[in-house]
Image (cartoon, rainbow, N blue to C red):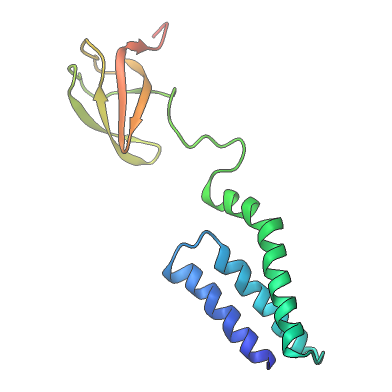
Length: 149
């Protein structure tokens, strides 16, 4: 197969990964393997089609096994040392919040719904700990307030 066919395949796969679907970087590594296989032909190395396919498959498999998980974790924010959940963090509310009621606050750069899951009213500016996360709702309670606040 001509080198340019491998390049077209590689660019198509990588573009599909980036623009159309979230395939968790599988298509990206398969696309890179196609580009490397095409680069072999571009340098003047003439290989039979069956050998090109074996090189392509080996590169795709090896790169996915060796590099995909680490790269995916770094790009998706699931790297070691990064806690994606706000459980246990404290926040202060801008207004009083009765038991069972909810309000909106700005937290971590976005708007969240905060619900009072406790038995008593949370007063304005009182520090409370996040005890549960239900979707985009942070559950707090006066019984979980921070000691000394």
